[in-house]
Length: 265
Figure 1 (tube, one colour):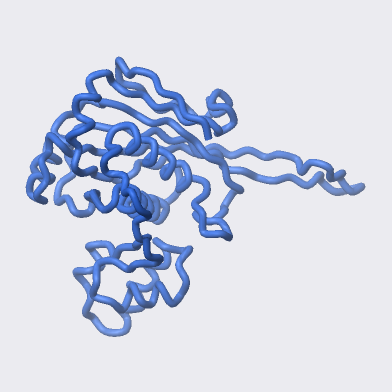
Figure 2 (cartoon, rainbow, N blue to C red):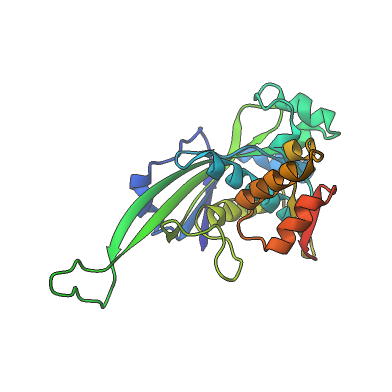
């Protein structure tokens, strides 16, 4: 996937899904950076992953996207991440106070906020002719286009943004058979990697960071309650992490630890 960078002079908005064709068939990532952002880059010590805003799907899709974004940022930044659920308030004017409460300097902390849209298209299967009396075989695809805005946690101005996209079969899972992200999760992962490379390269770990998954804070508060509560917790975790094995889900649900290491670094 190619990457382009150009100065950012004014705030930009996410282009509609109808403009996907201008993004080189979902093969291009565009990085916008304000010129004065270079002064902040060496000082960044942490990044806040704000809850993604999806223009599609249900609440479960929203929660799953937020969970994967948080996990991806933890791994990509070597653990220098703050998740939205750790903040008691996410109002833009109060984020700095929340970051300070967690022990970080708001002037040296960035926020990553994602806006995502999805388009659907149908393509005829190449090389397959329609059988007499039957419709020609087709494949349905979802095209995801996202914009990630980067801000200093104590300022409302956007200092940079990442625009990228990804395509997956309609209704495909978040991970492919080899465990690699696809669709929306792939686009978010690419945006996070480019944002860190551009605005906080010192946070990228030199060695592979362990792959971890996390019990959401709201579930932690209800660890006791008998078998029904345990089953309910397992079901919620399964909706957040459909790619995990049943053994990993059971270990995460039964443990009082906040994180489960899926694979070591």
